[in-house]
Every structure is written in structure tokens, then in C-alpha cells.
Image 1 (tube, rainbow, N blue to C red):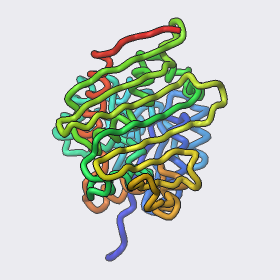
Image 2: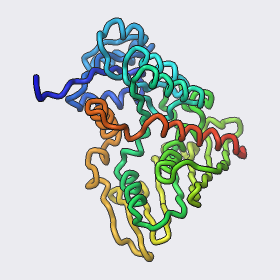
Image 3: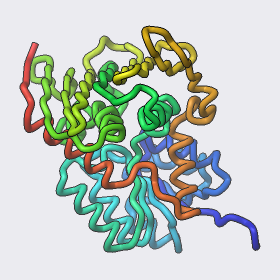
Image 4: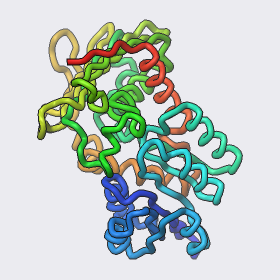
Length: 336
């Protein structure tokens, strides 16, 4: 009917934690119908399919035979599988959103970008921090000169080992890319979003014995503007340690600071040693404050329907991956 927005039909590949998280978000969006869950684990896929009222398939080929038209495919699989499924989905005619990182190698990322152009299908990468109100507001403040010329950023992201992944793939460097690519990439992408393409790279990676799948990392980036960005990440916090994240961005006339301990999620703009403005993340964006994945996936759907540019495109995500690659190429490895 005239005036009604088109309903988008989608498919989720991967019935693990992220697949389940994404499904819950799509079910809250009246512009989306999930037509299928693709996973080799029939039992896990069936649980999600029952919730969505859709079919279960063990491959994209099987899904494509059963569904006449799938507007988008959401790839929630181990990072090493992103290229295979994203390229296949685009070749079958679907737009694609893939969990971060875009891939584990630059060759894979380039193949995905090439397929997007060749198939005339859109490709978004789910760097969720760009949709968190405190990160988005910090980007706005830096951009409008609220702290003068940026000088430096220090950012932390600390958690215990991610033991919730299927077959523990996040602990396997060959599948996850290690802590730098799985965890630090959030903040490396944020740094590049603020300051552009880095020009120098150095990292330190510390692990326990042979367990470099979980490690603590310190990455140092510099930019043409003279900004230095230091990113600390760890998957070696004690078991049960709650995720802690923080950043402080310093400039010639002030700084922006935030951490997960602030109440309630306050982002503070500091001038002359005093907090001059405190932004409540919940008031900035209530939806994203409660569930940034909801804001991210709602934005993805809105961009598809209305032809808007993605907030995170594949080129941005490739730069984050290239940054990680350069940090690994300039790494000092330590063991305790």
C-alpha cells in the first residue's frame, strides 16, 4: 500500500551468542522479518528459529532454495569464516552485515569489499561502539573543537577471558585474531574514527605461558596531526571481572573523560581542571544506552530502506583490521 514502508526479509548465520543477541533486536523492529537461521548445530538454530517463527537451514544454499528473496544476511560467525559467508550471501543477492572484525586477514577483507562492488550489494561491519552514546558524543565534541586541537587519547578495555564462544573459538588465535583483533579493535576503530589513518604503530603483548589467545596488550598509534593514541586491552582479568572500559581525550583547551564506573554513564567535558559539562549517556540516547546493538541494527535496517550511508562501512572496518595487522607487525611479545 502507498505510504507503507517495505518490510525487509533477513537471515541470521550463526546461532551462538551474537546470533541470539542480534535476533532479539530484529524481533523488536517492525520493519524486519527473519526468514531463517543458518547453523550446522540444528538444536541451537532451532531454539532461535522457534523464537522467530522461521525455518532452520544448514547452509546458505539451502536457505536460498527455500526463500525466494532475502534482503539481508547477518553473519554472526567466528571471524575466520566471515569472508566465506559474506561473499556467498552477496553473490546470492543479499546485502550483508557482519560482526566485527570484518575478517582476520586483509586479503579476506579485500575479497569482501570486491564482492560488494561486483554484486552491487551493501556491506556493513558491526563496530558497535560507534553506536554507543558516549563514544558518539565524544566524536561530536572533538569534531566541533570543544577541547581545542586534540593531543592524545588513552583508552582501556579490560575483561576476563571470553569463555562463552562456540568451541571456545575466541581463545584460538587462528580463528579470532587474538586479543588485539577481538577486543582492542573496538578502540582502535574509535581512535581512527576520531583522528584518521595512523602513521606509526607499536604494540606490546603479554600472555601467560603459551596462552597468547588471552593476553594483555598495549598499542600505541600516532597520526599526522601529532596525536598519540594509547590503547590498553586485556582478556586476563580475574574470572568474573566485569567489563571495564574508559577513555580520556586531551586537547589544547580541555579534555573529555568517560568510564564505565561513572554514574550513570556520564561523559564529562573538563576545562581548567573543572567539569564544565556532564552528559548523561542515558539522556543522549536511551535506546543505545540500554542496548547499543539495538541502535546499531535499527540503523542498518534504516540505511537499507532509505539508502543512507552506513555509520561503519567496509573501508572503515578494513582500516581497523590494517591497524591491527601493523600492530602485530611491530609487536614485542612477553610472557609471565
